[in-house]
Length: 159
Image 1 (cartoon, one colour):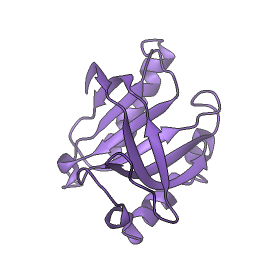
Image 2: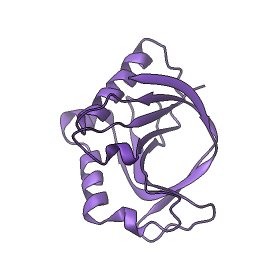
Image 3: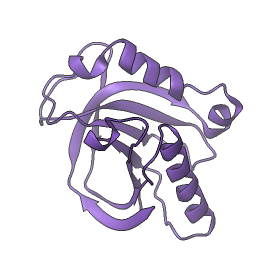
């Protein structure tokens, strides 16, 4: 896995949203798999107006405190400024921020994403990531076209 510090400009994303916690996700009662299923079964990406590209972005946001508390997850796409969210979707304004960009190893989905998050949690526990728990991103671009040999970028907000 590769890690670097990057800054991203502000952007907007439109998608579908849910609320969950890591405890629920680890117990198998979480909502993230169902959100992904809904995103694909309802062809949500095709319903997002003003898309800037075909990348799918999962945004972890609205943290109550840290990774041990509830948070929200939105799956969607970057959109042009001023785009309005269609019914059943939400618009998020992501401010310009500094991130730890962690690129997963190449491998099978969703394992590469899970392993990348394990790296984040491990670095957090060792105090090697000074996380802000504001907006964390998973970016699914052309490198995820083959789910047997995918590579994903995580952007973890840091101070």
